[in-house]
Amino acid sequence: MFQYRTLIVDDEKPAVELLLAYAAKIPELEVVGTAHSAISAKPILQEKPIDLLFLDIQMPDLTGLQLLRMLKNPPAVVLTTAYSEFALEGYELDVLDYLLKPIEFERFYRAVSKLVGSRQPTVGSQAVPLQDEYFFVKTDHQILKVNFADILFIESLREYVRIHTTTQRIVARLALQRLEELLPAAKFIRIHRTYIVNIDAVQKIEGNLLYVGKEQLPVSKGKREEFMQFVEGKLL
Image (tube, rainbow, N blue to C red; front, side, top):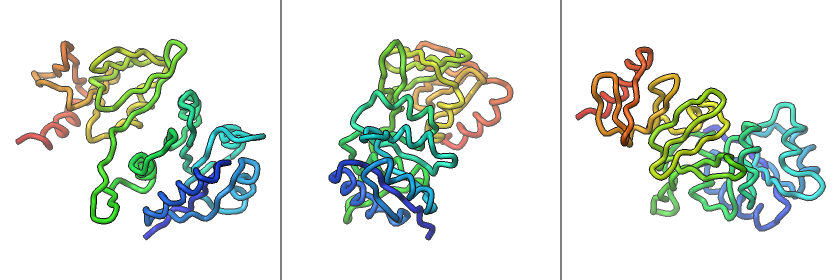
């Protein structure tokens, strides 16, 4: 079994100990080192091959984000912090995931699964239920949390997207492709160069139109075959 060489960087000892305990539950992770500052982490990253880096953002002297910008070929990075306002900047640096403290094991496991593949973790004999996924977007001088399960569909507006949820419409400066890569392929599918749809929100299909809430969304000619294969895989 391949093991991902893992480094944990956090200036708080309890946080390091928690991540060590979580990592010990996942056989694919091999923790090869810990560091209590970004400065002490840098030589480890230069000297050892690291596959996965858990990196705290708020640390004295040098922040995790500042360290990340210094790395020419960074490993897969999971940012950890108690401050949600750093989420957007973290994703702009192409991190694997972003964990808000206090971190629960289920959320930790979801982050790791993006690298090592998805499987259901167990603790003792009890399966651990996985939580709903989410992401943060910056809009109108605030950062909003968007749950995957709340999304109906997403619409491209060139440099922006409009995220249609069950409760609101959110406009954010993002590329549609970025969200397509982030959202789980088992639930979300690109039906047009302009639209990504949550298949759970589709009420009916009529010709090349999908009925989602009060909206009718077109399936493009180039995406129709892929979409119908997706639907037929769930057809009884």
